[in-house]
Every structure is written in C-alpha cells, then in structure tokens.
Length: 231
Image (cartoon, rainbow, N blue to C red; front, side, top):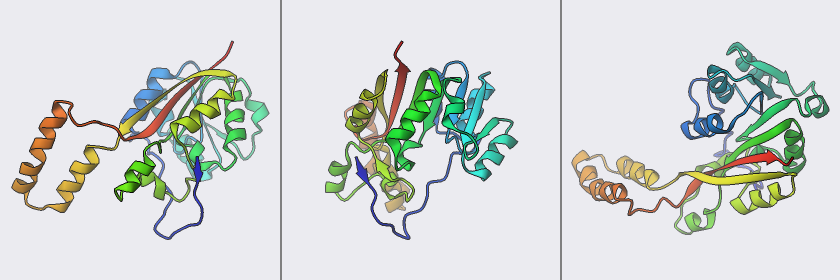
C-alpha cells in the first residue's frame, strides 16, 4: 500500500456520488449484500443510502461534513453527525455497515476500519479503488485516474486488503471489478479521431474481438469486500 506524498494543483478532490446517480456496479453490490439495519459511514450526500431506502431498508448516513449531512437529510435520510458522536455509542447497533469509497481517504485506516466494524452486528461492505496493476499501466505511460485524486491518501492492492481483513474477527470475500480496458481505450480512440468512419473502421475489429471475449478485461479499478462477523 502506497501513500500519496506531496500535492499538485492538477490534483483535486473526487466529487461524491449524487442522490439518484450512484455507480451502477457499487449499487448492485450493496443491494445484493446488505442485510437489516444499515449504517452508511462516510456516505456523503446519501446516494447509496437512498437506493437502499427506496427498497425498504432502514438506513442511516454517518458523516462529518455538514453540507453532506444537510443533503442526505434533505433526501429524507436519517443522519448521524460523527463530529458529535462517539464510536462507542454506535457499537453493534446496526446489522450492516457500509464503507463505500471511504478508506482511501483515512490516514489511520486500520483503527478506523476496526471502529467501523464494531458498529456492525453482522457484516461490513467495503469498496475502494483497486491498484493491483499500477506498475503494468505505468510501464506504458498510463495510470488509474484515482491516483490523481488529491484526497486519496491510501492506494490499496488486493493483497493489502487481504492482510487488513485477516487481522479482524471476520470471514470475508474479495472481488475485483469495473475493468479499465477495453472501454478506456475505445473512448480514447473516439477522442483522438474526429472522422467517424475512420473511428468505426478502427474500432470495429476490437468490438468483434471483445464480443468474442478475446480481449482480456484484466485491469480492475475497484475492489469489493464483504466481511462477515465470526460467530
């Protein structure tokens, strides 16, 4: 796991997901695995909490950002101001805890994850940007776009997450998804060439190969973890 050192005016904080516009893959992951009462820690404006509420879940957003708390409350969600709440007050009160794109922002992430997991009586669902193939991409002058997000202070690989969850009293599953290629390459082709006929002729063979599953989707950009508390 690497930490971002220094800063650049080109690096900016990543915007939170807006209510009504969640990432499809993340929303599907949450809806598939959430159980009972849900606490969405660092849930921002409530984009994923709102998707759960629409489907009948009891869900609460816990945040430190006043603007995010106001937005989540305006969307009809229950909220907890973590500036005024101790972890001990939340211990074991929820069946499922969400940490969606949160841990990469936390300097002391080991203690934070332990505190968050203590709030769950059953399971914790986590997603973070995946950095498994950073060196491979960097070797060809490419990188993940989340590397340049200024408020990401941690950059996790799958092995980092396995080691992290092995230290907790839980069993867990880890999957990787949201592959970077070939979609990023095809988008780049469209941007570089204005001639639509030329783009079509260049991209068509790639589309056929992709349809035949002959182009490997080998650059996952996100890790999905389900951690279940040991009985």
